[in-house]
Amino acid sequence: ELSGNMVLFRPSDKRMDKTIQLKLDSNFTQAVSLEGLQNGYWKIQISWNDTQKKYYEEFPLVLN
Image (cartoon, rainbow, N blue to C red; front, side, top):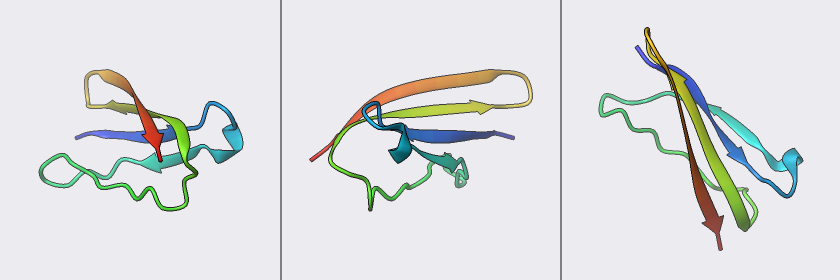
C-alpha cells in the first residue's frame, strides 16, 4: 500500500504552493488539474512510502 503527497512548489512565492494527497488508481496514476496555477516555473515534489521504504522525486514544470 502506497501513501504520500505531491507539492506543486513555486520557488518565487511559497504562498502559491499547493499540496495534494496521492490517490493513485489501479494503474498507479493520478490526474492533477493545473487550473488556477499561474504561468511560470514550478517544481513538482513527490514523496511517498510503501510499508518498507520512503521515496522522493522532484521534477521541473514550466506553465505557459
